Image 1: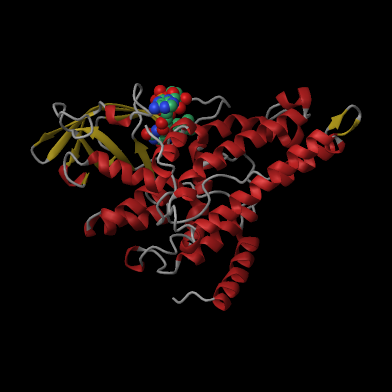
Image 2: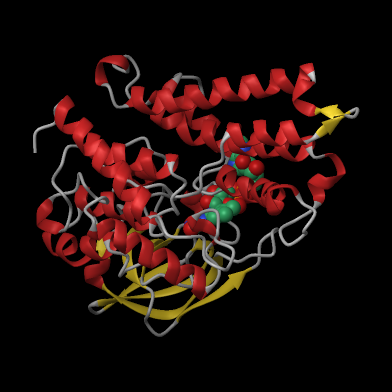
Amino acid sequence: MQENRASLEAFKAEVVAWFEANIPEQPGFLLPESFMEVGTDQQFEFLRTWQRKVYEAGYLGMSWPEAYGGGGYPQAYQDIVTSEMARQNAPFMMNTIGLNWAGPLILHMGSEDAKNRYIKGILNADDIWCQGFSEPDHGSDLGKVQTKAVLDGNEYRVNGSKIWTSLGSYAKYMILLARTNPDTESKYAGLSFFLSPMHVPGIETRPIRKLTGEYGFTQTFFNDARIPTSCIMGNEGEGWQVAMTTLMFERGAAGGQAGGISMIDLRVDDVVELAREAKRDGAPAIEDYYVREQLVRFLIEEKANQLSRVRARIPALVSERPSAIAMSGKLRTSEFRRRLCQLAIGLQGANGARFIGDSQSADAGKWPRSYLNAFSATIGGGTSQIQANIIGERVLGLPK
Ligand SMILES: Cc1cc2nc3c(=O)[nH]c(=O)nc-3n(C[C@H](O)[C@H](O)[C@H](O)COP(=O)(O)OP(=O)(O)OC[C@H]3O[C@@H](n4cnc5c(N)ncnc54)[C@H](O)[C@@H]3O)c2cc1C
């Protein structure tokens, strides 16, 4: 389909109407705030049904090839949908790891068989994906991964443990980084990358409880688990390069994601409302000069983040440093979210400690929960310190 202003505007009107008519009512249970916090079967089924509905309406994977279940549209169409989902506070797309990193990776370098086998199930949420990179002793320094995959006939025998596996309890497949050769000179050369099934004997998951009391990730144990050699992505020993390509998708530095939001949107406008309600020295907090200044700074930053997302997609505006904006996106937006929640809690004074379930809490206790959850995104997918290192080295050209 050709992209032109008239067709984009007509499409936008259609999308606005569809989401207005189809966003589900809030269920009678608490929904998670992001794909990293899906902890109950109720939440899982609700979000799976929603993702499927969005896909069946044609609003997910719009830029992916039709041959594998995508829409075959220019990216601009999917961008309209994704923005509208955020604007209308739609529930997020749960299969984020499939949609935004495993899927693009498979389309980028997978075999024809892999594309046919996996892509549609990612889009319609039949097949949930998780990521097995981090280990109990190796997170930022992934090159030290110790989980072993030993070739045995037409299978690999996998032993070891992964941790912080988001969606580990529900996933059917895992993108798995494991060591196939322990004797290489460089630690990176002995790694291989697999599209591993999760439902095979020898793979067990144990849920981990979070600061908020909720669940969402697991420790994943491999005890002589056997996975077919056909699961390998790239060649044996090339896992590091494949993992780095995956992280480019994960961190938003490479396009090709299926679209959709992966966490609920937090808005400065909501904190402005909170500042109208909260009191400072007996008067509404919003009348306080310092509070107003902070709110204005956040509004500017929120707008800048929105515009940066648009700018990153216009080649003429980013030609000097093509991936700079995209690469800094995760650092900017996750830290923004954390600081915004901090302000929202601060405005409530001692009441800021009132959590979900406390009838006297502001916004039903949303802010302290969001504040604790906001740390997730500053750690998962590479900590803020690691992101800053990457930007320093790869964008600004600073020494290591
Ligand atoms: C909610 C959540 C979901 C997650 N989901 C997944 C998942 O699905 N799959 C998965 O594989 N992993 C997942 N993770 C794990 C995450 O990727 C790791 O926690 C992260 O990469 C950091 O690794 P680590 O915890 O081992 O900390 P470490 O690497 O031990 O880091 C500890 C501290 O040292 C700092 N640090 C380390 N190295 C450097 C350096 N070179 N320069 C400066 N500072 C440094 C870090 O920034 C951090 O502050 C998730 C984490 C969270 C919180």
